[in-house]
Amino acid sequence: MLQLSSDLQRKYTKKVGLYSISHHPYMPEFCVSGCDNFVLVYDKRNMKNNPLHMMCPEHLLDYGSISSVTCCVYNNTGTEILATYGNENIYLFNNLCYEKGAFLHCYKGHANQQTIKGVNFFGPNCEYIISGSDCGNIYYWDKNTEAIVNFMPGDISGVVNCLEPHPSVPILATSGLDDNIKIWTSSAETYPPDLADLEHCVSRNMARTTLENVDRLDHGQFRFFMRYYLSRRLNS
Image (cartoon, rainbow, N blue to C red; front, side, top):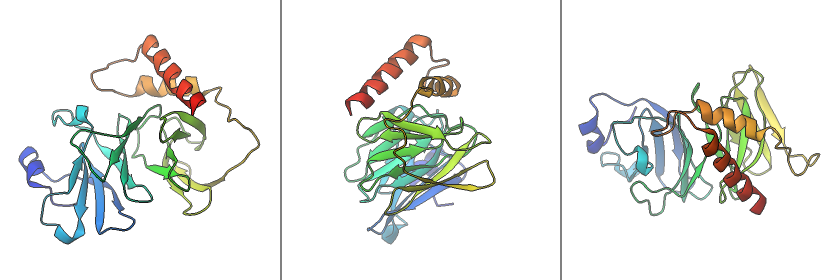
């Protein structure tokens, strides 16, 4: 556990458990996340000072709606930080000039409720976002369009938790509730990817996920979501 900043100490009376820590690829800086709404970015040379940044989407800044950030990671240059929220979505933050409440992109469609999910970048220049899900699938989003460009079964027991890309070649290691680690390599056997079951999986995930001020996602909202994200995929 890390000592909380003075701002957080005024809001909480106990320490916050941490789920994730990631080091900047070049700078003496790291980010942590855990049982609150914030990704905290620290300078290792000045640990007694407040964090450099306290990253959080605008709608989760209210301390009355506590979520958790189950994983946070830097991109390959340290300019961006990716964070996945429990019962919420995945957010990409600008680490160069972060503004309170602002985020660059939001990625939806998976489910992060049952276990502590990881999230990561994929591709030589972090072109894609990858995450596991409670539905047992691995999801791939285009970083810029936010479209789901691929998904595939990743765990027989039903949950994918950890994803770790190879540093230089397109190989991915994943793990979940199964008692093994799976190694995935790229394949051109089917192109474009078969997304026939995507609508069903996303519909089920979104129905089970608690969103801000939404008790249940109605059919019209879901159809709008699917048209929006699938159209972005086709145009990407």
